[in-house]
Image (tube, one colour):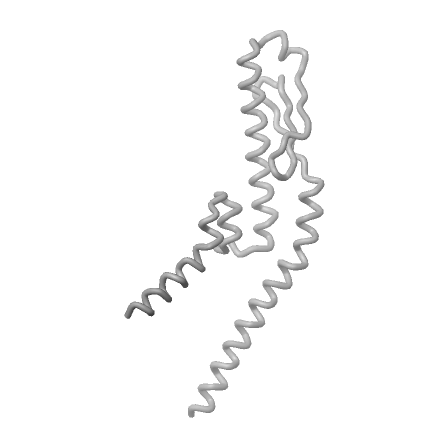
Length: 142
């Protein structure tokens, strides 16, 4: 009976290992695709009044800015600056969503890396390790 239980456990462990390995291989193969797509990513947003067009890259960096002639005629400098900022922020937010969706094709939604991509919180990257260390410390204190 014990031998059968050991076999069942070994089969379960092997199945889990195969699953994890498959996820890793999928992610690893996808990294080249992600890197290529990120290197060419450009997202453009337009202001509500159509006077400003901002294009940002994958990291949200401004790579192009277009102002219509109307922008100079209608807006005072402070209003134009606010319109530019809002438009760049809009493009950067859209870029963030696209990057998340792209990476989400390869990472489990509940993974630490996916959590970091969603909210930029470095705590997500170490949350699992923090929990393990906390539990190890509690076990040591018992």
